[in-house]
Image 1 (cartoon, rainbow, N blue to C red):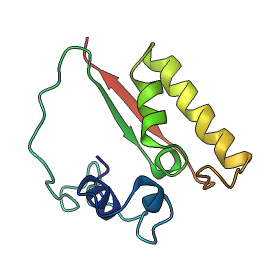
Image 2 (spheres, rainbow, N blue to C red; image 1 turned 45 degrees about the horizontal axis):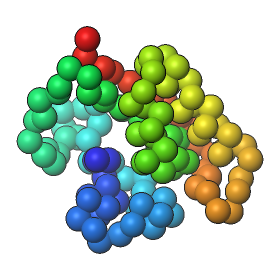
Image 3 (cartoon, rainbow, N blue to C red; image 1 turned 90 degrees about the vertical axis):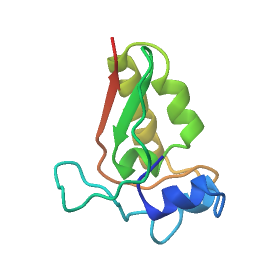
Image 4 (cartoon, rainbow, N blue to C red; image 1 turned 30 degrees about the vertical axis):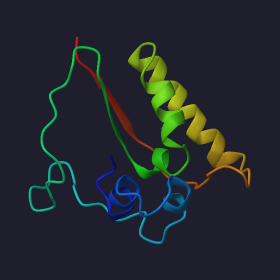
Length: 116
């Protein structure tokens, strides 16, 4: 779940993922890695299973791909292959805007992690 007001709104059913993609507060974060003063605990810690994959990504990914698209690519294959595919999909959306799909040119960073 995105640690943002729009992420919480999606989780509680207040807005749809489509509405969040265009929400005026989509850029606001509640947690920042490495900044203890910028942290809001939003959930209990989760125990990772052997094949769980964790994604940490900037809005350059999350504003250009729907969550089901991200999940489909992140859950299968090697992490480098999945990361490359996600980056390419996001860059394609940024470059070749389609009014039917999310598209917001931005910087992009992501980390995929899977326990061995």
